[in-house]
Image (cartoon, rainbow, N blue to C red):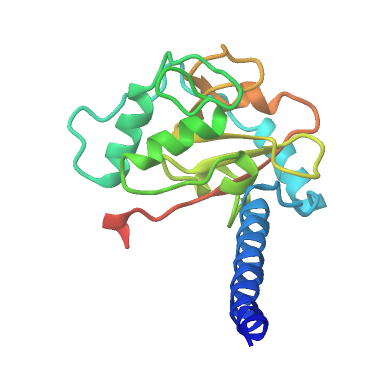
Length: 203
C-alpha cells in the first residue's frame, strides 16, 4: 500500500514538472523570436527608384534646424531630447547613457516621450514605408537604411530641411551628430524606408 501511495503522489509532481518545463521552453522560444532579426522583404524597384530621386534632391541648407527652445508638444520634446544627446560617442550595442549605437540612440530619444522602441534597427522598422520624398517626413521620423536590399542595417532620425540626426551613420563622425541626409544618400546601393510614430498628443 505504501508503494502505491508514493506512486500516486509522484504522478502529480511529474505532471507539474513537465508543465513547468513546457512553459519555460515556450517562453524561451518567444524571447528568441522577439530578439532574433526578422527577415525583411527585399527592396522593390520602386524603392530603388525613390532612392535615386532622393540622392538627386536639393542639398540641405547650410545650417540644420535649431532644437526647440521651449518644447510644448511631444514632438518638440522628442527633438529636444535627440539634440541633447549630441556628442555622445558611438559604440556597437551601447544603449546609453555614456555611449549609444544607432538604435540605442533612437530608443533613448523616444523613451523621453513615453514610446518604448525595441532594440535593433531591424526591430524598430516595424511598420516601415518606402520613402520617395522628404515631404513625406515629420521631425523625429525614423529613417531606416538598407545596403544590400535584403534587410535593415541602420537607423537615424529625420530633423527637417534635409538634415538627420543619429550615430554611426556612414561618412559621419562616430558620435551623435546632426548631418545632411544627402551625404548618406551618396553611398551606392543605399535604399531608405521610414517609419512615422504618432505620439501621445497626436492621437
